[in-house]
Image 1 (cartoon, rainbow, N blue to C red):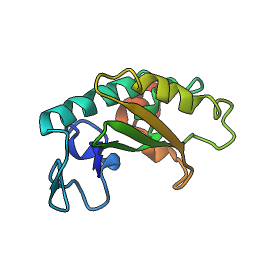
Image 2: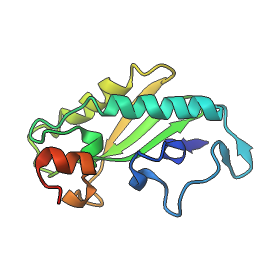
Image 3: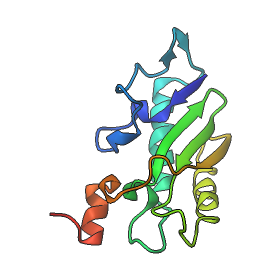
Length: 142
């Protein structure tokens, strides 16, 4: 069973990582309780997001999380982390390297057994995915 990490993120974290229809009760899916308790899932969520915020797009002065390149984060019962991410453009010069940067940042998080980064382009990234922090860093905030 897969647990959506985004279901337990603090309020200040990007809402667009929540599953469609909003969050479900943490650690309960279809009546089954996951192997990860609520406190541990919250800690993992916080630490994974903190790790993602250390990965910067070399062309944009902000991290991949605030830019909105992270589309989905899941943790399964074995603590395997699956991340769907995109790029600002499919022809990005670091397209082949950035998934490795994300994997290398998240892998050492305590409690993570492994990381699988999937590159997706649907939906395509748009500037509307930028957080307020990224908009300020880019001078796009109004």
